[in-house]
Image (tube, rainbow over all chains, first blue to last red; front, side, top):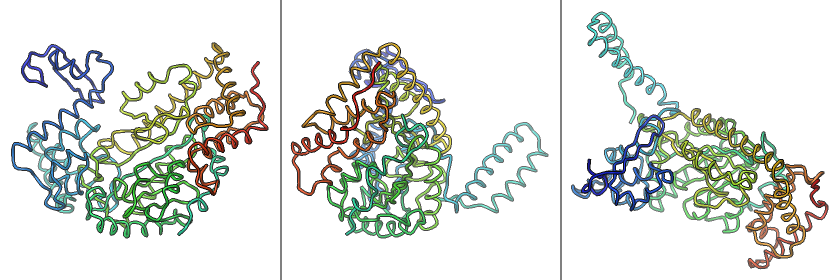
Length: 168
Length: 357
């Protein structure tokens, strides 16, 4: 196994941390482990390290291709590197790909749970119900329960007719 | 221009507010980060856009019934001293105190709500309560947010929730925090393991004035860090649970100290009293650290007849901006140290030496 930092020397230091339900693993060679200050495995926050790694990988990827800019506010990935803040609400769509990994290491989950503006709450609930029905439908089909599948299909049809909008 | 010092109630009044467990939990707060859908975040928006945001948000917030008796002002209309005063009252962040043109503030007289406009996000609204009342603070700020969303178009995404300038606040945009006085754990040298285990639960421990500040006067702020993937109630409940445990540890530490090392405790408290009651020049930092021990002494009933509010008031009025506000002349740091010592001696005139039997 290769060291995940220098990608040269064999990894001899293996770190595992469980945060919530997520398991994070790191495999480092001895030199990189020392350089990162992991002689004492109890004294570091793995999330910080993972955050750093994730961020640099994301930036490398952007440097290789053409730089993405937010069409709405002109904010670039380099600006994000400088400030750690985004430019406008739409930046979350513009930089969705790069942010996905970052959010995973930062938060408990990647999907919002909790309060939503009243106006969006109903369509949001409908969307959640739709996802659930679709899951059930897939299950019913693989179980060859076509009667249930037909019933679910009708329910999905009715529901998506009522709330087709995905609030963005 | 209105004067914030005239508007806010006196330090005496503000430190006489009580709440559950206020021996240890000095105050609870919940803040929500919100942004307007159609504007760039404050850090990226140009001046005219920031002004436009302020002109939209300030009247909308000021018109809320919760803000019927409130102080609403643009930050460039406040003096550096006023801003420092607001920081010392924990009504605005240090970051917000550095803002000028295009940022604003609305705070109500009871100091239960404070809304920062164009801090890092367009809105940072917080509900504050004395003592351990995180749940009440959440309910209050939830209501404020619901009233405001009828007037302002908040940036929200079905998958990512409320969109914030920094991805660390994404989702619920919530930060639940409590300010804790933990002299027992510090004296018993148990504070570091406690901080470490609290960190492991995904919660942050910070100093008196939040991010990047030291724990002056043994005051620590505990707050959630993750905002996405969990509901507000789950976050509030988890923090409540952890706070309950910290309170228990602090009570146990105090008890154990009194049983096993009474001399150490009496020595610390006695010396703190000695210096505070007799000093003729004292810095703000030393005052806070010694007042913390005095507060512990009051909690341990070593100063019969003295109330915690006396110490809490001193804690507030001896800080630089509060001190400066009471004196009309501009003071140097050295002059402040003299006046601070005079003030503390005067207030402690009727407090007798600690009773240590």
